[in-house]
Amino acid sequence: MERKADLIDSYGRRISYLRLSVTDRCDLRCRYCMAETMNFLPRAELLTLEELVEVADAFIARGVTRIRLTGGEPLVRRGIEQLVGWLGARLGQGLEELTLTTNGTQLARFAADLRAAGVRRVNVSLDSLDADCFRHITRRGDLTQVLGGIAAAKAAGLRVKINMVALKGLNEDEIEAMARWCAAEGHDLTLIETMPLGEVETDRTGHYLPLDAVKRGLEERFTLTPSFRRTGGPARYYEVAELGLKLGLITPLTGNFCSGCNRVRVTATGTVYGCLGQDQKVELRDLLRAGGTLDPALDALMAAKPEGHDFHIAARRPAVARHMSVTGG
Ligand code: SAM
Ligand code: SF4
Image (cartoon, rainbow, N blue to C red; front, side):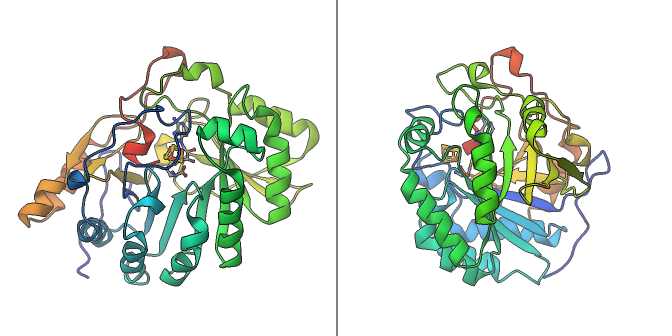
């Protein structure tokens, strides 16, 4: 593949990481993410699997080395195993890592395919280990199914990182239990603060749990040693000595992480956003369908990528109207 100029934004940040949303649909309805009744996009508006690969190739040619597939729920997209196979074939050809963020419901079915395509790590969202609480938060999820998916991923040789959104009054009492379970299973754990993205019927401020307080609570029982590992993403990492656990904290509201941002996000319809929490974007779908090059649009995105997000949970309204499931979490 022809290697072209790197993507560097107007703040000098080099873009090496792409989050590619393959669908806005999901088989769950997590309360902080979606409304109970969602209007999903008509299928014709989605990029085809071939178009998703074209987008990936355009970014790889411009220096993107890591791609994470997301959604919505990526494993409910028809043909996902084919897409993962095609993208996996780019590994070692500019692409260094292909990963996926999933809710785990379909992992038992796809874990072996993912591993065979070259995926080595998956992030699985799991907000509770209590079946009733899990069903309440996801509005329909079956904990046993998800735990089965996680076990299948581990058995297939995939490293698993659990993503847990910390929610006041819902799962805040379970954080230590989740940390212990992850340590026992050999998974990493990342805790996430709720972000004000899209209307979800309820007021998120009620469940907002600042992670600095969670961290202080954990530090009463465990030794958290900061790790200097940074991925250009929003997580800060710690080693929990007593558990042998790697713990990530994603604190978009209590800690600013934008200065080292190395990523952009493509929606399932081919809109590219420079920031999860801002509206600057470029559209790729019409360009793809007209057979043109995507480079001028990618350059325009670099000029438009904002310096940082503008989340304020106290504002009691979404920072942007789109849900995380649209931009691709
Ligand atoms: N369906 C997949 C999943 O749940 O992992 C992938 C997409 S989901 C949008 C990606 C991540 O975003 C999940 O870990 C989810 O918990 C998180 N998420 C969704 N909405 C969020 C919000 N408003 N604030 C913080 N995290 C959110
Ligand atoms: Fe679906 Fe993931 Fe959003 Fe939950 S967080 S509703 S699993 S897209």
